[in-house]
Length: 476
Image 1: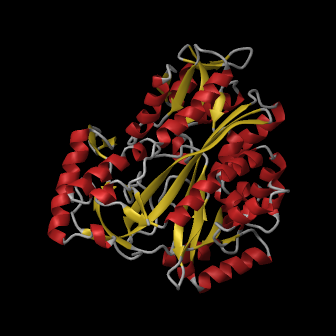
Image 2 (image 1 turned 120 degrees about the vertical axis):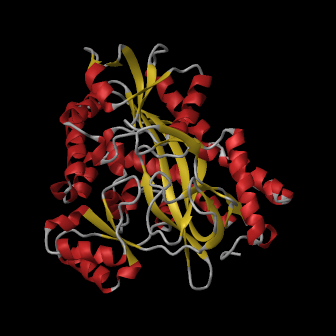
Image 3 (image 1 turned 60 degrees about the vertical axis):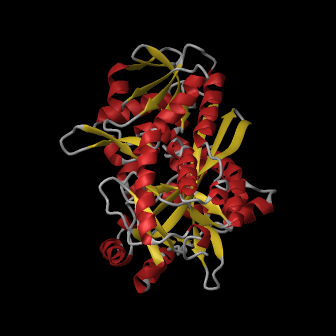
């Protein structure tokens, strides 16, 4: 079962092609899974988001394991964000050579020095996993990364269950269609942001989505916005440039943008170097961080999502620091860690370089970047390591064991892509939210899941980068 679509929903090629056309029409007619995509001539085109023809089989045990862990990962992220000394030690080598992380860390240091203006913290995280298949055919859950800023597709993944239910019904698989799980991360994400807004304490203040100049994934945001408007909470969308031009802090550090008081800044931008086009953008980020507005995430939580912190957490004894009297929690979290190895200068880092160059097919080289498409594999990884192996530049990366999920057969439906059966690999994401006021955890929830699937010919890349497509788990 792990190597193909289950027998009950396996179709011949002709029927697959027919159902693919039906699925496209259904998605368009129902008006779901839509996004804005900018074309080279700068015109805008509304099209359906890419998705799989069929849901992908996922073992129920590992799926449940991932969901059960999320509140612990929420707690872990929050505890690390409050530990300035740990972040300093963990990122010390990285900020020496990675300019982007260094700029973020400089803002973090200034906030620590001044003291935070707002005691309310809101975290919207997504922990991503693959199922590593052992030689005996069993699968184990292994974490790829944890996203602490702009964790996407909580909106669109709220719609995919209905799409796959419809497709399976058309295929005559009524029993299978009833097994598609309900999933509404958008509602959970909005619930946490709304709680942060409530704790800010001003009904006139708005929630500001900080967004990119050219937004290719706008409808993913809109589902969360709609949930907030349903609660009679006003939102607005602004760019760094807008904040720079019209933003200000009053004597109480309340943030005003375009004359409106901002209760919560929800960062859907600001996680890649290219998001900052000028020093004014960096100044705008600092102004927001210094403000009384609740930041989602704040700068320290943003830094918790770096690959270097992920690698340090895998070091023996580190998790115990954050869960000193909870050995079972430590064991459960550590069981999801793949091998993670430092590239810091010294004998341990030298050993990591030698290990990777001796068996490059076993590893992936990761820089401190988000957004998909940044990792290095195989010969390309070797080229990068050969260039940096003797210098401090190598500390901008970490090395991780390559995970080997079981392939499945499916059809990936994309605009202007050929219709064919492909061998695919999937990645499971779990959304978690928390709100803390002072030292009191007001809310800590697992609010849904995301399954993304890509052709096995691609080593790296997400939906936004045009490689993966949206999917649903079919538990077995």
